[in-house]
Length: 318
Picture 1: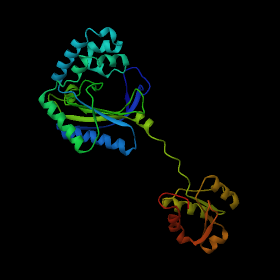
Picture 2: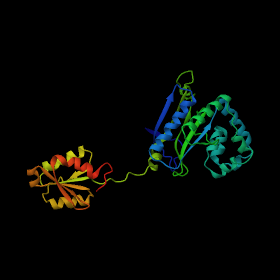
Picture 3: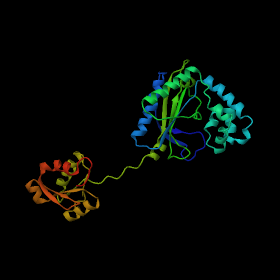
């Protein structure tokens, strides 16, 4: 459905956009995380997308992130002047988001020591580490390729344990096609009761997804029905469509069969079905192969089967 973004719109980050997603509530297992990620990966693969990268990280629990945030502030407090205005603001409000900055100068700063080593140190609890290790093992078992990325924090601060993004090399700076993870405390934060509800899931941006899909190749016409009798033509174009062929005819009512054949050629039809007065009277149909000019006369009851042989499932004009 439609979503709205508070931040400043950018290329690939519209004010209003659309998302499709998956959410699983009530299950707090690594298997649920792995299945969620697997379904996202399989969906994008089924759509034929190439050059995808699955990035994954362990965010730990809220108390783990609190310790990490404070340590990150300590490491960066003397470097604030070299960071962009967004990172300077995030230093106070949510320093984890600093790691998500796309500014190359900021990213270069985060690659320096000792900040680089600190960011790559796993400060999560043993329980969170074991959960994450099981997620990775399950992805390995399902042959899902991934990259562990300690800089991956996602844009919202409600994630626990697993976070992931699937990015495309073909989208530029805003490269994320799908993102999500586990968010066990979110239902409670939103007023859904006094207890945490285990949850995991993801969302895909439809506009970005559509921009990656190749436009469908135009499909040619299989059959063009040529007749000087409208009821006959309409009957045959209906029959051929119901049989699964791409069929058309001339609904203008012009009688000249030659002009109708010219229209069939113009539309790139593979086959023309000719049903003049003599064919109607004899219960026969002329099947004309437009590429070669060859034609054959068949009984009306044999035509659909013959079209299946001529065009078969690949719709190749023979």
